[in-house]
Amino acid sequence: MRIMYLHDHDVFPFKKPSFYSSPSSSHPVPFYFSSFFSSFIIIFSLSVLLRHIIFQVMAITSDAQFHVLAVDDSLIDRMLIERLLKTSSFHVTAVDSATKALKFLGLVEDDLRTFDTPSVASKFHQDIEVNLIITDYCMPGMTGYDLLRKIKESKSLKDIPVVIMSSENVPSRINRCLEEGAEEFFLKPVQQSDVNKLKPHLLK
Image (cartoon, rainbow, N blue to C red; front, side, top):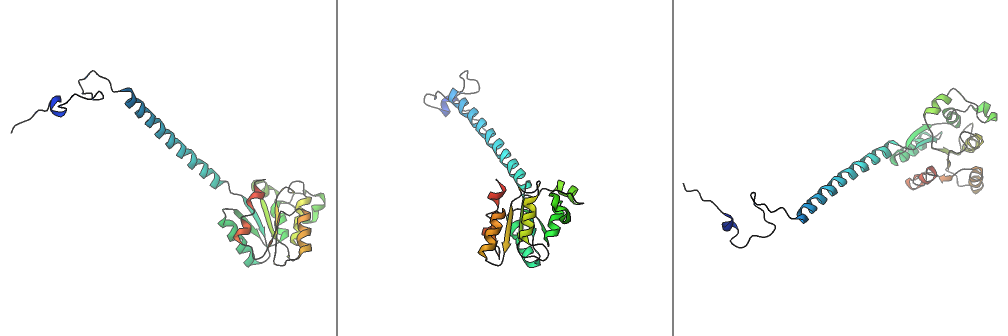
C-alpha cells in the first residue's frame, strides 16, 4: 500500500491566499475573521438571554391573573359568565347573591351604615384581592343596583370597578347604574366581546 503525502503546493498549486494559515504558519488569522466570530458569539448570547427574559415575563404575567367576583342568582347565567371570564384568563369567584358577595368582600350588610364594618370574611378578603365585580341587576333580596351602591359607599371598596348585567334593556335603569358609578352595563346574554371590554377598566 502506497501512502501519498500532500504538500501545500499540491493543495494550492497557485499562490496561497492571504487568509490561509497552516498549523505551522506564523501568519495570524485575519482580524476580520476574529471580529466576525466574536460578534456572532455576542449576538447569540444576547438572543438566548432575551428569550429567557421573555419567558420569565410571560410566566409572571400568566400567574398575575385579574380576580373577578361574579354575582348572579341564575345558575345558567352564572356558569356562562364564569366560562367567558375564564376563557379570557381571569380568575373567577362566583356567588349566587349580593349578600354573599358582600360577605366575600368582608362587609356585613346590616352594618353597612358605617361603610367599613368588617365581618368574619374580612380576614379572608385581605388575602384575596378582587379586581372587578360583575353582577346581575335583578336578584331577589338585594339587587345588583343595591350592591353597586354598597360598594361605592365603602371607603375600602369604592375603587373596585363594577359592571352590571341585565336581560332587560331599560334606558332609565342603565343610566341610573352608570350615574351611580358602574363602569359598564351589559345586556344578556353576555358575549365574549363584552368580556373583552373589561380589561381596560382593570388597568386604570
